[in-house]
Each structure stands twice: as structure tokens, then as C-alpha cells.
Amino acid sequence: MVRDDVISDQDELVLALYSDDRVLRDQVCVALGSRIADDLPPVRILEFATANALMAAFDAGSFDCLILDAEAAPLGGMGLGYQIKDEIDMSPPIVLLVARQVDAWLAIWSRADAVAPLPIDPLTLPDVVANVIRADIAGTLQSSVIVPGAASRH
Image (tube, rainbow, N blue to C red; front, side, top):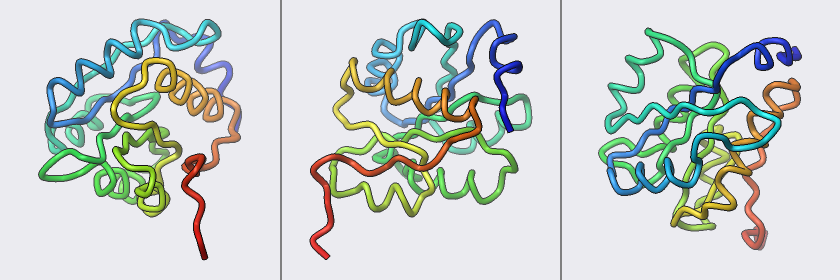
């Protein structure tokens, strides 16, 4: 299902950012800025400090992408991502923020569509989010959580 017409008609992309850490939320917002790529509409970031608030927001509208902090407490982004993919039909793409490359396998379990490293890299994060949104628009979204340098020894 190609969604080019849907996105091209949008005035903005709505991104949901979940983290219990206010400093991390600020860093993500600064890194993403108001536009993540020239070929995509401007972004509006809605911040959520609790999983309950994010889940309630699904009742009020939709999101073009979710950015979830794997280190959040009491419910981490991995568990929340798994829950969202399991409970919400046509869930938006999920970018999981992970502190350790070795957690990439957990991102696969959580059904995240991509990972971005912590601490926030202001060059990498917008690129990861833009690529996931582009793939979703084109209908070619596949999990890309393999992290360079995190190969299995098995």
C-alpha cells in the first residue's frame, strides 16, 4: 500500500516521542528540529513522559512515527513498542533509542522498525527517522534494526 498521496498532502508529520527523561526528550527535539529531510514535510513532535499518556493519545489521533526510549522506566520503549505492534492495527513505524549495541536483538523482539543510538547523535537520528517514514510511505517498511558492529557470534 503506497501512501504518497497521504503524506504529500500533509502540512506536517506528527512524531510521538516517549521517554521519562526530560533531558533526553529535549535532546531528541533539538536533534530533529522542525524538518528531518528536505523531501518530507515539517515535523511536529508530541512528547510523552508516560506510557499511559502515549497510549491514550492514540484515541485522539494518529502518528507518522513513534520514537521510544528503550531506557525509560517503569515501562521501557522495547516493551511499549511490542505492546503497540500487538494491540494497534496499522501501527506507525517505531524507532527505538538504545544505549547499547548489544540490545539490537531486543529491538527485533520488540518489533521496532529501526534503532538509533544513545546518546543522541544529531546527524544520525533525523536520518533514521526520515528513512523509516520514507519506507512507510512507499509501503516497503521492513525492520532495519541490525546495528553495524553488533553481529552475532553464533
